[in-house]
Structure formats: structure tokens, C-alpha cells
Amino acid sequence: MDKAVIQSTEVSLRDFKESTIWADMVRELRIWDLQIQTQYDACKSMEDVTRIQGRREALAYIMQLPDILLEGLIKQREEEKKNE
Image (cartoon, rainbow, N blue to C red; front, top):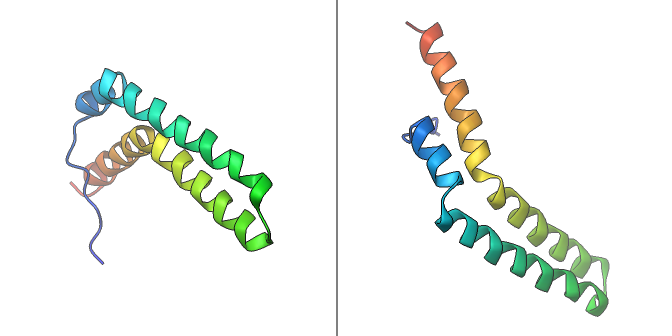
């Protein structure tokens, strides 16, 4: 598998992170998370609990994507400098 290359710039990622679009997306993801949390009471098995936990972990990861991409971009730059 090819290594993922982050094409965004640091400025564009920071601008996106501070944008109203991202704020709207995070707000919607938090609403989804709250809705998922209400499903715990209806769980009939550990499999149900595990599924809910997986969904919540996925949402948490998505809400961290701008920071994850920024971190990846910094590492990518460091590797590029080493290879020069």
C-alpha cells in the first residue's frame, strides 16, 4: 500500500479547523454521539455494547481529523527534509 501524502497546507488545515463549516460538522457529530449514548440502555449483549463503543470511537477519531492531519503534515515535512 502506498504511503498517504497529505496535500493540504498547514495554513489550509488550520483555517479549516477554525472554520464555521468544521464547527457545524463537529456540532452534528456531537449530536450523533449523544444519540448513540442513549442506546446503551437498550443493549441486550456485550456485542451491542461493543458496537456502540466502536461507533463512539469512530466519531471521536473524526472529530480529531484536522489535528491528526496537521501532525501527519509536520511528520511528512520532517521526513522530506531528512531525505533531501
